[in-house]
Image (spheres, rainbow, N blue to C red):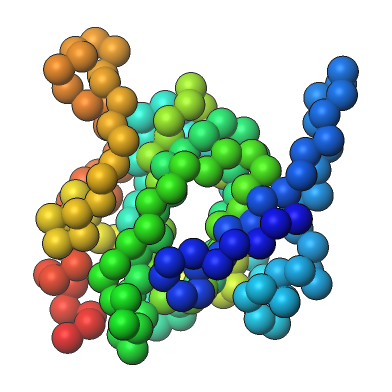
Amino acid sequence: MQVTALEIPGLVLFSQAQHHDHRGYFAETFRRNEFVTACGDVALVQDNVSWSQQGVLRGLHFQHRQPQGKLVQVLNGQVFDVAVDLRPDSACFGQHIGMRLTPGQSLWLPPGFAHGFYTLSDEAVVAYKCSAYFAPDDQYSIRFDDPTLAIDWPWLPDPFDPNQQLLIISDNDAKAPRLSELGLFS
């Protein structure tokens, strides 16, 4: 397993070897000892999985009082994954990293990051290991196109109107406020 520290401190990319043969492939997707060495002795307490069709954007989501660290992994398909640093004491506060994730890669976001992704393939299955339980009364979203974040999403063309971008988004995410409008980090 290859471990790469990314530009924003705390973000770590794990790249796993895939062993292919005529049946498909096999890969180890998580080794606690390597995770602890790279990320610290973090207890991962909840697993989540999402299925999304092409053009779905989920995020940017976070918990504020009970922040979740997330080990994000694409099981099938390809996504453009985004992590936004919301740690108040971080020199990188408000900065983000966006990258394509495919099977064989896992991205660790420590507690204090907002997370979102855009589905590039026909469909994608994304799994998350979380360091804190989901707290419905502590969930927040930041608008995906917040100009202060300036995320360069790799939009796909809408198959029915190539002059438009393909974007399928929840009402909650479409109505999310900008980071400056949240009032949580002043």
